[in-house]
Amino acid sequence: QVQLVQSGGGLVQAGGSLRLSCAASGSTFSSYVMGWFRQAPGKEREFVAAIRWTHGSTAYGDSVKDRFTIIRDYAKNTGYLQMNSLKPEDTAVYYCAARLGLAFSRTQYEYDYWGQGTQVTVSS
Image (tube, rainbow, N blue to C red):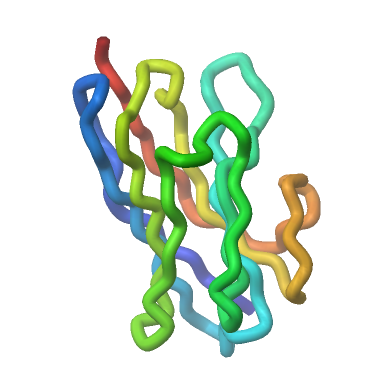
């Protein structure tokens, strides 16, 4: 069983930066992929980024590529989503998630564990 606890988020002006954190506990995380998703009001949950915990390889959604970076601190069992050059359309509730295995997935239904979500609001 894995527990994911998120922190970070808040209100920022367009062009600014924020960093989200996702602390994992309850299981050895080495065989997991951590992902980040976001959901804006009235929209489907959207894939943002993912990282293979042991290998460190990453994948990104097209709308955030070159602006967001997913990283992990192996020793702290914590993943981060560094968000730069934020735009109003990045406004959403952001969720971290975990799935067992080494394959990336951009589909929310293939993730087994979820954080509580955190609001990110970007003002224009």
